[in-house]
Length: 129
Image (cartoon, rainbow, N blue to C red; front, side, top):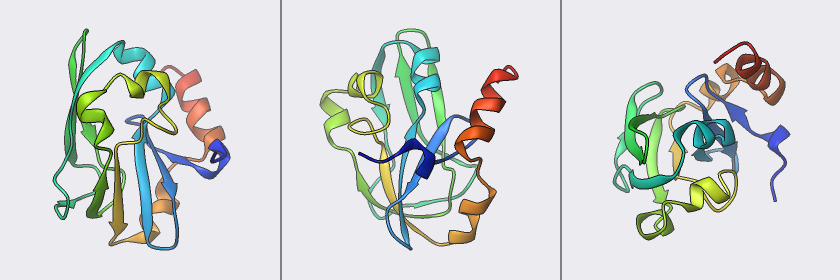
């Protein structure tokens, strides 16, 4: 299990775990899944598609609302969490492990340095994200 201190975060409530020098796993935070409520559908990008930092990469629907998911980084989608197609509620139960969304091959690894660390992210939430 990855330590959350190893993750980086966005102000849009996505998390990023760098898997190696050139790949990263992306998901939504526990705060985000709590705000959404029961998640009922996930629209993920296609494998081999390109995503760009700050741009929409998918949609997440809950019993409360539908929300865009923003890519924290730029790169090519190399893997999606296929379990979420049949069981999107996994995100509610385990947003940091089994509920990950996609993995990408980074085009701009330096973008990782622009994301928040855990302390900065929790301070952002505390201030009323």
